[in-house]
Structure formats: C-alpha cells, structure tokens
Image 1: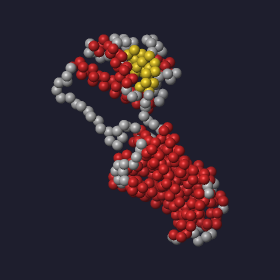
Image 2: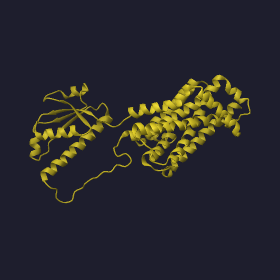
Image 3: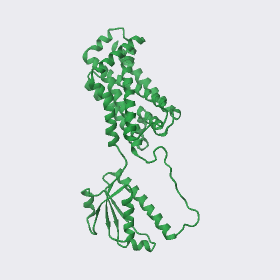
Image 4: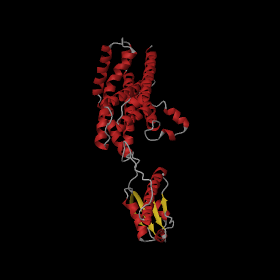
Length: 373
C-alpha cells in the first residue's frame, strides 16, 4: 500500500468535503443537534405529576397525608374534588394523572391504630409512567406509616433496621446521565456510516469512480484514503458532542480520555467500514442514505441497550444484539464516562469492536475489489 496515494485520496476527499457545506454541516452540526434533541426529549424522570385529591374526611390526619404527597418533589396538586365527583372524567380530560381518595373515617381509624385504606386512582394509558407514579406513592405512604408508628410507640425499643442507601455514579438517578452516553454511540454510528456511504456513491454518480479504477490505485488504498478524512471529522464531532454534553447536561468524562479515545477510534473505524460496505451495493445517494439510515440507526437505537434493557427483550432479539457494535460501545462509554474506569474491565467488549471493524472492512474490501475486477 502506497502512503503517497492514500494521502492523495485523503486530501482530495477533504477538499471535496470543504467545498460541500451541507456535508460538513451533517458531520459536525447534525450530531450536536441530535444530542440537543434527544438529550432534552428523552427523559425517563417523572416529575410534576398532576394530582387531584378527594378528601372525604377533612381531618388533620388526612391533610397530613395530602401534604406529604404535595411536598414531595413528584406531585403537583391541581384539583380538590368534592365528594361524589366523577373520578373517571378527571382522568379522561387529563385534568389529573393521579387521584388520591381519602375515605370518611380515615383519621378516626388512624387514631384507633387500625388499618385505614387509601385509594390512588391512576391513568394507566402510559403503563411505564403509571408504574413510576405507583412506586412514588408507595414510598410516600411507607414513610408516613413509619412516622405514625414511631409517634404511636414513642421511642423505638430494641434493635431496628436502618437502611442508608448510597447510589454510585448517578446519585440523583437522573435518566440524562444514563441516556447521553448511549446517544453518543447512536449518533456516531449514524453519521459515520452515512458519511462514507455517501462519499463513495457520489463518486459513482459523477462518473469519477471509473476514473479512479483505471489508475494504479488499489482497493485498499481507496478505502484508506476515503476513510481517514471522515475518521478525523468524526473524532472532531465526538469532541464537540462531549463538550456539549458537559455544558448542557453536566455529563463529564470521569475516566481516562486516552481509553475513551481508543474505544471511540475502534468503534468509528467499524462504523466507517460499514458505510463502505453499504456503498458497495448502492448505486445512488438516495439508496445509500436509506440503507445506511435503516441498517445503522435501528439496531443502534433499539438493540443496543441505549433505551430498552436487553434482558427484557425476547430471547431471539437478545441473540441478535450480540452482532450490534453499539451494544458493546455503550457499555464502554458508560464505564469510562460515568464510572470513571479505564478499559481494563471492558477488554472483551473492545475485542468485539476490533473484530467487527476487521470483518466489515474485510468484506467491504472484497466487494470493492470484485467490482473492480
């Protein structure tokens, strides 16, 4: 392989990219825009839940429970319903997502130290949100029960369990801290695949690919020359994404930057190689864009553990995820960025990324060489 020829192709590609502001905007601007869009739109934290209360008891005890809900950081009181109000209508009109119903005699039963039922009516159209709301409500009621028992017994006698939870890496349990590293893998896969796929197909449409084939340029030199410029641009986009993630979402890299660079480099080489593979069976830029988008975006979004936990998937899909490079890259990203560790615990994941890059580059090389022949 001639280094001079590779550099010549790389300079040509950089010059061509610099003359195409749309391509540069896609490679540098689109990743940041996608980070902003997905970073703010994708959020599993449930806050400011619209709560309606139907207090049929109107005692200090019932008002204390209502206050426990309202003073938490989860619920906002939006309606005080009168006795006999139609609860289903409140949820149908989306006036409230949850309704707390306290029956008559609630306070009397508590004073008598007897069980007093409380009803929580939930809008279950969104099952995930409803489950989260139910967990919040159970936690608040449990705290209230503990407070009532301690007040009834005075001082607690004998040994007692005192749970002191300590959450590592994400103390506030913010979903953004979990989602942003996965966003990086998703965005880089999509942009890297499309950039190389479109660059090769552009040569086909303009007829310059035939001119390159009649020269002494080998397929390996063509692949290297086409890949190196977009590898540099993708690494620049990675730095921009990390800076934006820190400035906008407070997600900073806690682990070694060198380890993060190595993992990202290997991942990008595989993504760029996959883009070359897509270009080998695409003759138009429209086809390359559609094929590259579907084949890179859908697995990285749905089968990588970015949003949906892999263990919750059907067994068949779990086996398919082993062929998705974003699955392994997300594990490394969350380890380096959130946990602050190096590549040591993730050498197996890195090895798969190396294997994936070698396989897709090898297949792309074989197809381009066969087409040349």
